[in-house]
View (cartoon, rainbow, N blue to C red):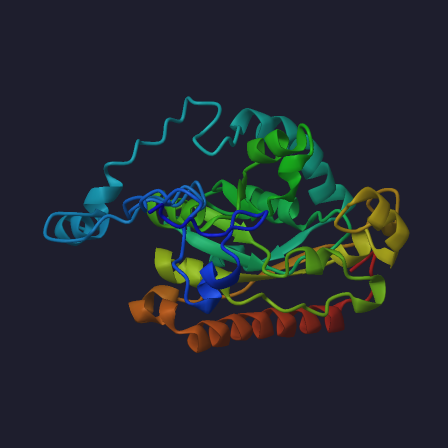
Length: 333
C-alpha cells in the first residue's frame, strides 16, 4: 500500500485537512536557521563598542584599575611628544600657529574681546568647559580658544567636542581636526579629560543654539539630557561654565529659508550677514563646579544629572542677563 503524500498548494504549504490549522503535521520547507553566534560581540553594534569581557579577579580593565589605580594606568599612555606637529587627535600646532595672526586679528581688533575670570580655567588637569552657542557660523569656539591661548598663564591647548556633521564635507573635517575639533563621543571625552587631562569645550545647546533667529538671542535652549554632566562625572573633572556676549550679533540670523534647506539638505539655511559684523565680545569664565566631589553613582541617577545640567544652564543664563544689562552698545560694549 502506497504512503499517502500530503496535499500542498502553489506556495508549497499544506492545504485542506493536511493544513496545520486543521491538525495536520507541520512540514518545514526551509532549512533550519544557523545556530546563534556566541555572545560577546555583535557585529551590528557600533564599531567603537568593544566586547564586554567578564570582570573578575585580575580580569578586565575595571579590575586592573582597581588593582593598580588610575595613576598607574595613566602612565601606560604614550607621553606627549612636543616635537610632533600632529598629535593623536589630529590637532596640528603648526596649523594653529599659522592661523594665530588671523584669529588674533578677530580677537584683538574686530571683536575686541574682553575675557573675565580666565583664571577659573585650571592650569593643569582635565576640565570640561561649557558655554552658550550663537551665530550662523559660530565664532565663539575660536574666540574662547584664543582667550585661553592669550590670557591664561598656562596657555593650554583647547579641544572642542563637535558634531559629526562636518565629516561629510570634503576638507572641512580634516581642517577641523587640525584645529582641535574632536568628534563628540563618550570614549573620546573620557580619554581627553580623564586619561590625558586636557581641556575640552562643549556647547550643550548644539545646533539649536546656532539656529536661533535674532529676536531669540541669548535665550538659552535646553541643554539636552545632561550628557555633558555624565561626561564630567565619569572623568571626575570640574565643569567651568562660560557666558559669551557678542556672538549673536556677529553673524545674526534674520530668518530661515526653509525651501532652500529642504533642497540642499543642510541643517539650516539662514538669511544672515555675508561676513562677521564687528560686535563687541565679552567672555566670562564662571567659577568651576567640582563634579569630582559627588558620589560615583550619581552618573546613573537621571534626576540628579538633569538637576545639575539645569543648574549650570541657569548660571550661564544669569551671567548673560547681567552682561547684557551692563552693555551700553552692541558695537562698543
